[in-house]
Image 1 (cartoon, rainbow, N blue to C red):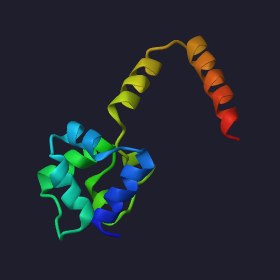
Image 2 (cartoon, one colour; image 1 turned 180 degrees about the horizontal axis):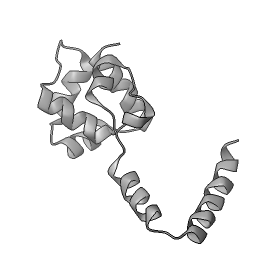
Image 3 (tube, rainbow, N blue to C red; image 1 turned 180 degrees about the vertical axis):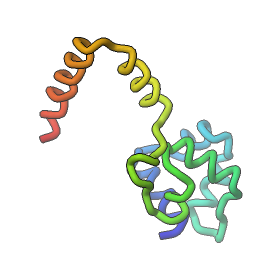
Length: 109
């Protein structure tokens, strides 16, 4: 798949509109639209990095469609903050949080 196809797919998967991506990256909607319409337009490295960071994926993924192994995936800032906060909890609170997550996950099975 091409950059265009991978970008389209990721935007659809994350339910993100061009306006929102433009706001997160500082790249105009028109320019982002050009990347999606396939006018042989691919971003320069700086823009590709901004797009990847805004989507929480790697540039490699956008270019090749191949994901990194879990140990090398980019962790979005919100999740990193949650991890830092969890690491500050004592064992009792970690156990309580784990029970809450397990209960929440039952909705998906």
